[in-house]
Amino acid sequence: MKPLLHAIGGTMLLALASAFSLYVAAKVMLSAPNRARVDARVEHYQPDVSAKSRNFTRSPRSKNYYLVIVERPLFAPERRPRNLRKTAAELEADIVEAELRSSANLTVMVHGVMMGAKENKVLISVEGANPDWARIGAKINGWIVSDIGTDWVEMKQGTETLRFEMYQ
Image (cartoon, rainbow, N blue to C red; front, side, top):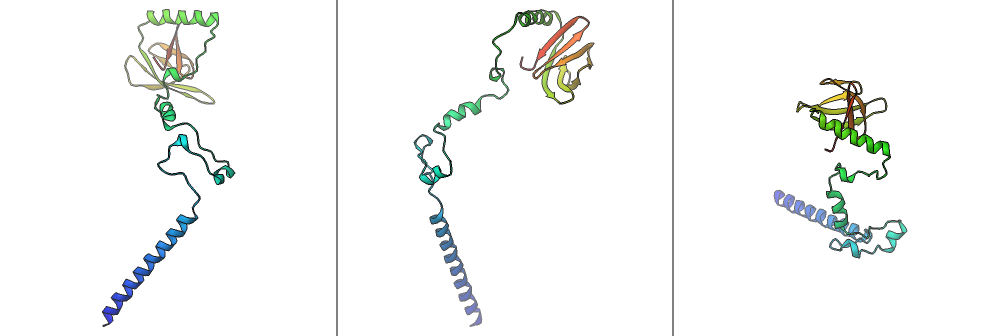
C-alpha cells in the first residue's frame, strides 16, 4: 500500500509542477511587449507606440541592401577612397616608379602592414621566400626598406627607389 501512495504522490507532484510552469509561461507571454511578427518583412514594419517612446526605429531598408554591402571584399582596392587630384609631382613620381619597377627584376609581395605609434612594420616576401616582418632600415636582398605606408613599402638601392603596394 505504501508504494502505491508514493507513486500517486509523485504523479500528483509532477502534475502540479507542470501546471505551475504553464501558468508562469502564460504570464510571461501575456506581459511581453508587442513585437513585430516574425514573418513580417522589414519594408512594411511600422513600430508601435511603445517602440517610439523608447526611441527605437527599424531601418526602412531591406536585408538585400545590407547583404550587398557585407558580401563585398573588405580589403579590395576598389573599396579604398580614391584621390582624384594628383599634383604634377605625384604624376611624375608615378611614371618614374613604373619605369624603375619595369627595369628591376625584384619580385616583392607585400602581405600586410602594421602601423604603430613608435614604428611601422611590413610583412613582406621577396623572390617567393616566406614572408617576414621588416622595419624601416632593414636590408633585404641588397635593398633597404626606406618608407612604409598604410598599404605600401618603398625600398632603395643606391639611387633607385621602388614602391610596392599591397593590392597588386
